[in-house]
Length: 422
Picture 1 (cartoon, helix red, strand yellow):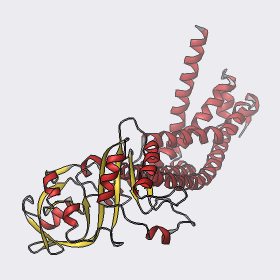
Picture 2 (cartoon, helix red, strand yellow):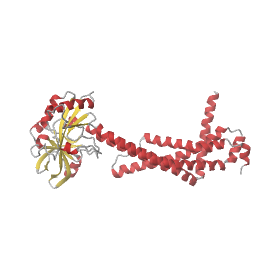
Picture 3 (cartoon, helix red, strand yellow):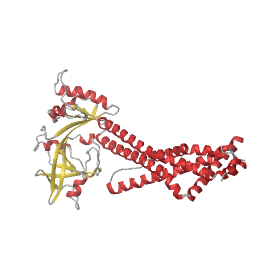
Picture 4 (tube, helix red, strand yellow):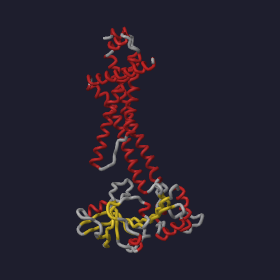
């Protein structure tokens, strides 16, 4: 019972101290503003950098995941970069072919879906008097929808028969639809790609910008067999890749190990020969960038902590001034029976409240900036709950550190000397 009363007393003291702190803040608004400015700037720097890094990481991960977390990609260019990147050697490697696609499909036991996709150089696509410029093309095999996740806004993907018969059908991105068909329904309309007519059978749903450039918004997709009629698919001007989706429960690493053996067999490489292909996976893209984001985060913390350090000294200075101004009040409180911890808590809570006010202002500034960036630049920038908690915890910690010595000094004042102070 006694312990419960003591707890209630401490809680009541904290509440009274908080009310007293807010009262002191209101009576000295200019001093409060100047003393919390450093905390505001510090929290703003830290949380703004953390929000930018978190948003970039999420956008990057979403872009990478669209390639398929469980997909291995066979192509001639490896995704690992650095000073030893032998681009001249990789450039001379052969592109994966439709023949190799069929052989890999026969030999792999760990893949459940496979597709060949070929990147076509940017071109102008026309419909009557409307043009869509710098459009990237893709020629894909029938298994593409099983490997690469996407949604269709209108229509359908081309059928197996259309693919086998090399029909001139096309699925277009949402940006292409807006440019070519601003006011009419696009399905079954004929567009011109490189002077040839293609019938629109589907439209991809809008995906938005991608950090790694794999959005389907400004892309057209045609069957590989159709592209073979007017493009040399093994030319160095085009890049092809074979994508293999792992079976459920099979890791990409296991699939990769199997594909290395399959590809060496398909290309008849001797045991001592260097591979003339690369097997890529999404982790190769995300790992280096995570290290970069870690450096940016550290830089944000360093810049923010310097500002917070200055703000902490400002808070400590203000608290010493506050103790001096209220020395007689402290003496009266102690003469009436106030315990040392009562005085300590009162000034400590005031320091914490000062820092919290600065921290909250910093967080509000970050929030409104994220809203502005979203509205005007169409960038997915957000302030997460975790970053809000980080800002609050840092503010409280700085308040406790910078306010402890002034609060301790106040709690140790002699009541008689304090009452006599002028």
